[in-house]
Length: 78
Image (cartoon, rainbow, N blue to C red):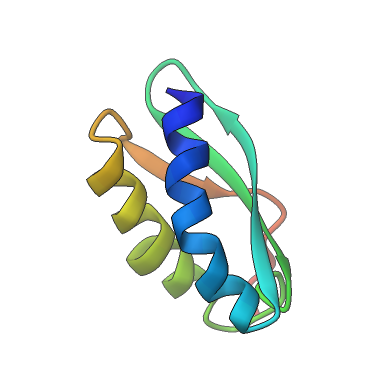
């Protein structure tokens, strides 16, 4: 499943990088929880949670139906 998640993140990465950010895969648990770290300008962006839930999580669940949730690691809310 980790390989599928990596492939899905690769499809998202260009949009994040266009805004000066990126996403790093931290972990994929056996129960379908993906942990990612938003980096660059995405790491401190006030819209980071929206990017995570409406963008990254939506695409990952669409591409890898086994995914139950996507969580951010080290994300600070402003």
